[in-house]
Image (cartoon, rainbow, N blue to C red; front, top):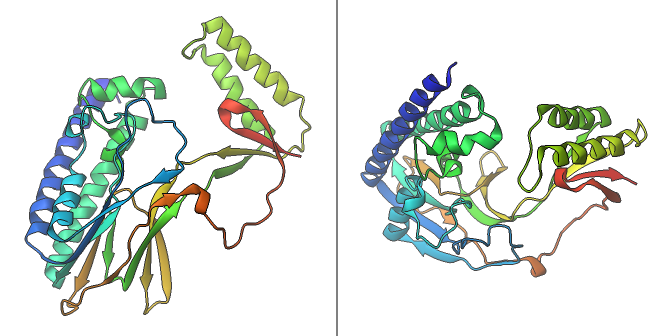
Amino acid sequence: MSKYLSLEDLNRCFHQQENKLRQLRELLHSYSLLAAHVFVLPDVKKGSEHDPITEITVNGISGNEALDLGLRHYQRLFIHHNNQNISSKAAIRLPGILCFSVNQQQYHSALNLIEEINKLKAELEHIVTVQSGVNKEQRFEFVHNQLHGLITLNAYRTITPLLNPDSVRFGWANKNIINKVTKNQILARLEKSYNSGRTVSHYSREQWAEFVAKEITDIKKLSDDVILKIKRPVKVQPIARVWYAEQQKQVQYACPLPLIAFYVNCGGNPPKLGELPDYDANAIVHRYKPKAKLLELVIPRLHLYREI
């Protein structure tokens, strides 16, 4: 598909999402609120996006104020929605939950609308990352020439609906993402980068080609049966643990924006909701931490390690 048609689709899809989000806000404002808890996190200031995070102070808000904050947050898609001192590179997170007492018809109306919104979010991401045909380095320009100031991660993040959960507790997750890869997979990735002729900031084309060629040589020196892992650090993120007593099942969700819980014909009894505690990296106690295998860093920019 041509880039021109992709731009048309980008604008159509985004404006449909905006319209559906407005509809959702109006619809939920008309429902009976059982409870609402949101947890305001400190703003990420410009220039501090990559600073290590050791502490996060949480400001809990409840009731109608939490409802208004939560519903507005779903529509917070542009940089100009933020204070000018807030980083445009870090997506704004507002963990929490909005709970409504509804009948079957109200539940299905809201669920259908949320599903439409989430499909539009997935379509928007597909248009930008696949359909457009632009490489990763060009995506910012592709999006922002049409939707100036769009915070793409906020536009991609889906809304999570829940049905009759018995309790919702909140916490923090800060695990690394670890993927096992083969020597041939890494070589193929490096050779593709070398043959592309592209460069990165602070390097000339020739310097970057020389840099990647050295990485290829280093990987080729490794034994064929080497165990390689990409261990990518992930910034601490809020999570929600949702409990369903009848099924004796707990489901864990990433919680960058408020969950929406619908209580169908439940008589208006308030649900059991927990608080999100402050985060303190130095106070974490692991109930069970398996002994990790020793790793040696091979290619820092790829977070590539080998077992030793």
